[in-house]
Length: 82
Image 1 (cartoon, rainbow, N blue to C red):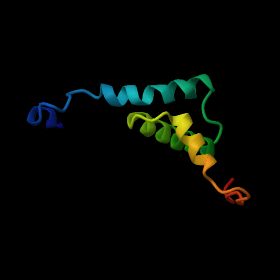
Image 2 (spheres, rainbow, N blue to C red; image 1 turned 30 degrees about the vertical axis):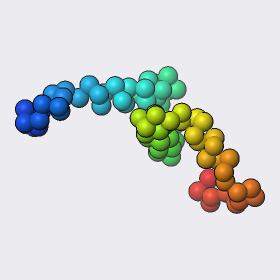
Image 3 (cartoon, helix red, strand yellow; image 1 turned 180 degrees about the vertical axis):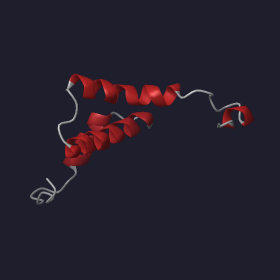
Image 4 (tube, rainbow, N blue to C red; image 1 turned 90 degrees about the vertical axis):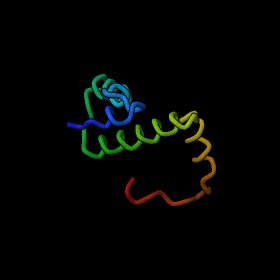
């Protein structure tokens, strides 16, 4: 049993923060009837991670991604994985 919360009062004794963090992804998966492939699940997982990290750092995820994509050079060949 982990007792970090007893040694460090600033550490919560529950995992509510983690549970709240994954809840939106679970709801999206439920409403879209799940991921249809392993590749789709990997893509959703990666995008969710990027969006969540940007939000936690105080950035607007959509605006940030659009800005990043706008900075890519034109006529760049597509990645072979797509």
